[in-house]
Length: 260
Length: 106
Length: 164
Image (cartoon, rainbow over all chains, first blue to last red; front, side, top):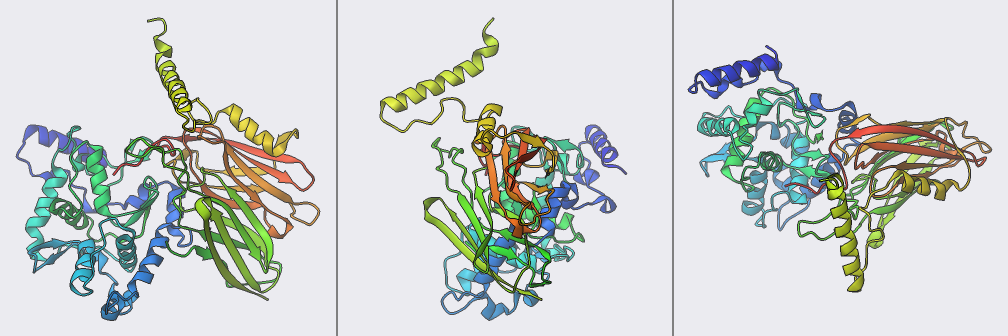
């Protein structure tokens, strides 16, 4: 079914029966396309070449940080060669953390390693060090399919994320689903509306002129509908991250991506 | 931040035209933007880039604020002899960054 | 009523003039121009004249490739290539890129020589508005050639501040 038909269908159903679950508007598995495919050819070319992709500057920084000793240990001392030990890791996150009893994203994992195993202060959200390490780790999953969400303990958190995705928010009173499930492919201010799959995070966003995380992007989306943004690290952000990754299960990772 | 990303072929035939790609981390603050306090953010850009090949200048560029952040350049030269490329970026506030790359020319 | 259509620009200009006077009066550094900081076809023409002097710039030999609809004005990748044998006696000395509507008319100037082999380079520019972009090649024989393109920019650089 085309996106337009899906959208009309969802709208009609929603109008007729408020109790219909949000799944009515979800994109069919066969219709899922990476956000990469909605970009212009020139932006895709920028991403494809490692010597022209600005995200690689952070990956290289991350590689240097990986081997740097903090107190007694560097990341490498426990994890060895990241090309081996980190392969597929970013494609599984966020994961359920038994100690905290809730999902944890890659950024929180890196921070907690620094606190618990390196006895160091964690890097702040969106700091260049955290982004560099995150980019370096995510790079090791390039090309691999997203596998997030198989743990049964994640179910209630995935549902929380799904609810947030489908909730109308902000002064503009729009939900994520209304653009990214129901109207993807249509154009807004010269750009195509993508489906909103997080396959490329952390990514170099042309609008930011720098690399940024998925949480930063979610905050910008909420800001865009004039809603109150959740602070970095908030459970709502993690629940949304989790839902988005589950919604993208099977799609290939392409971090660090370039996006408009 | 990190070292500049340079892409130069490791080897080439004498007389072959090779592509050199450079990517460097720099905000290239234009000097035309205002901060959230309404104050103009001062200009802070790379102003010049020079590439030498075994000591001879083969490419030079003057950058203006309209050069995008994290400046990217692809340019060409004829592979003439084995040796070293040296790259230098200079800019506002005493900014200076260098890099080198080797090539074997058969 | 009758003057309403000019009201907005008149008000903005008078505020800027006022601000310039106040700043000058207080001994603060004034902005160089009291117009809204923006290149115009006239400032671009004068920036070009600074480079080419009185020589005529002929269209031809140069190809400026840039996407016609720019996805984001902050980073626009482009390539300039110039037809030239690039020999010791016949080569492209420099390529200059200008724009019409950014706060400043210059984008980049690159200096080549016969050792370049190919008179071409690729880089990334910021574009503040839908505008004309011009690439001018300066040849070893003193002649100037150009290519002009028109691009559409919906998400601008330079004049929009970042969002969270």
